[in-house]
Image (cartoon, rainbow, N blue to C red; front, side, top):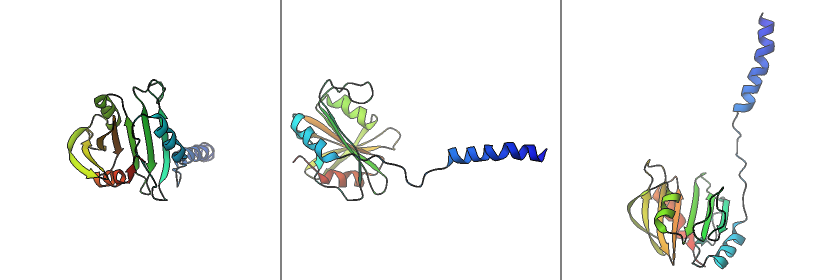
Length: 171
């Protein structure tokens, strides 16, 4: 009986171990973000925010632009000229700047998880509105840039967001 149990239990334990182990370092697909910044700045019709440089240990994970009416994410259609640039920091915090000339209220609600305002902060060349999601997990900074609305989003404190905001420029 013990031999039969061992024959069944050993493969089951190996299968459980194989499917539940966590890799040491996740495989993060990085993107070449600088050409996308140049393309967005050519097509957007508003001043596009992006850093000139970021710390060397930050990993660019998302850089995309869509004209109004183009496919955005999944089956959604962009309601305006839309820009997104995201980085994974050395502390594995995802920071993204989202920008669009679509109606501000709907755009801000969609990228901030329906956050509410919490005050103001000056970072870089702009004054930003601090926002927090209803569950308190996601924080955002929002400002107007030309005819667009820009939002920086992260599951981090406002200091991290303000530091990133200070890196952003339109040139």
